[in-house]
Image 1 (cartoon, helix red, strand yellow):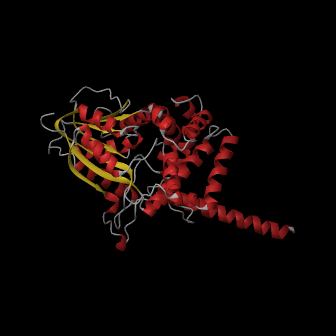
Image 2 (cartoon, one colour; image 1 turned 120 degrees about the vertical axis):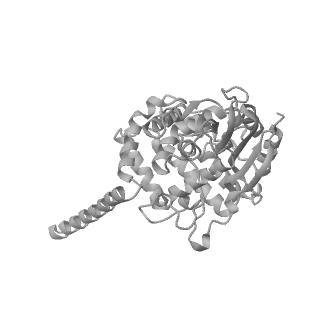
Image 3 (tube, one colour; image 1 turned 90 degrees about the vertical axis):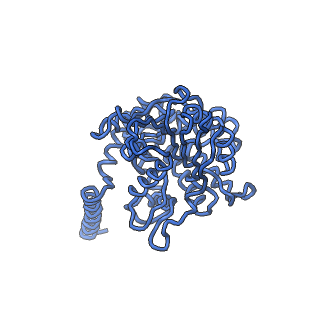
Length: 391
């Protein structure tokens, strides 16, 4: 290639890069996406991540042990080692979740003209409305079972005015959740806070709480009756528990190889010992002692698709738009994301094992997208139960 052609090519590349940079700056300044500041925050957190790990000494050891637990098609060892499995998963996944999804780690259908953030809050508020809290909830104590870094907890605290405690197994999530609570001038940990504990053996006395909820969290339990019984124990007589559960639906065929592939990808990519059918979860709620007030799959309800509404799994389906997270699910985006993280590892900007973690999470996203499309899986099976007055 002669010099003029090389120069022309260089200018073309420079212009393209400048154009991409200008678009990113515009998105940063004029939309809530904040891709630049979010990426810088993630890089900063990468540097301190290994100091906060509770499941292993470093990210590489953590992802290797996590992959070992998921190497078997049988769930026996994963159920037995659920604390190690879940703790490893959230040690590895929390940074990616917050960077790519936000502070609320759950799904929601989007109504027409609704933003992603609005749909997430509406989904939380709807669940909170099922808790039968009084008009003056400021003296009521509510438990968030499996709170993550507390996005729903903070939104529901503001929405209801109640005092909310979030419980999570992972200490990194406790620390990050309380950091975000204290950074919110309307809250602080005096109104809502995260505490570390196992929801199979909760560190609370009997009858402590006036209500409880769980958003896509108790799917990590090795035994649904066990976790629902713990929730029942810490609630007062007449209190309500409402949850969104991850479940296999009636469309799931355990003899279908494609269905089994999707189920396994979801389990492996999302820190789950196993995924139950909706009927198993409902019977477990009854066996734990709850009176069932409501149960249905919210994913099946009308979200206005004919008028522009979007299904919950849309963010996980492939797209060639480079300014959406869906780009990472096409073949080029998958490779690009992995190689970028390998480069960050090589430059010591990310811990060894980060790229393996991303591959694991991406696999889960593919399973969720495919499972949602096939309607064999739902992340929003709604159950609402009440503790009898004579407990």
